[in-house]
Image 1 (cartoon, helix red, strand yellow):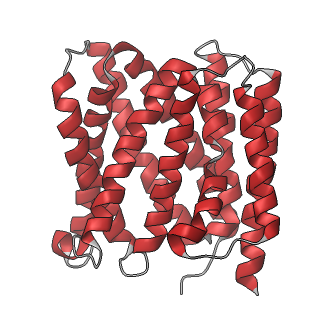
Image 2 (tube, helix red, strand yellow):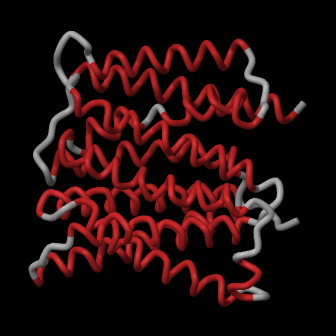
Length: 290
């Protein structure tokens, strides 16, 4: 077993969340100018090439990377992530980075809530209480009586549900497949699905925006590489709380670059969601330690 380096893992997670937040900002800009499906498609072309390049360097190459005990589940989770990314980028366009990430922050609570029916894990009353408090935070953000609440508010909520299911299926296939195999299916199946959708929405792109697109592709590859490194050097439970920094970085980007603002109800709701999410992570670690 590799020696754990938790401080390095934490710094790598901070870097990863910063890179992904910049990626979200680039996606918001490009999807505001061009069709979202086309933007995600081009992003996936580069990502799939990156995934296959990594697979080729591993022992056994592409043949071993593609070998799965659950190929249909792997294919479904790869397709699910591609659709989720499309949904979330649409949310950036209609709601902005701040409010989209505020709602999306509930996905760890959805993971905890769905871990019973999907994985057969037991969720105790403490975690159910934290999940309930977290969803009170979601309701505060959505403000059913007004404010941010609109049909568009359902977009990041749907993305959060899809991403939570993707995460649970990733844990499920890990019972028989390696992380390299899951990564391979994520990139290749996602590329096929995003191309099947995006090819119908091609639009000419200006030279400056091709530069932004190239940067979007590079941040995608860099973010996934640093995330791989995170889990190579540190336990997931030790670094996962720092994943919430993506909300901070993306919100700062939304305010500074896109002129967005943070409503009081959004700040309060996010505080409840983050506290509830951190508690569920801590409680899960306590249960695993028994």
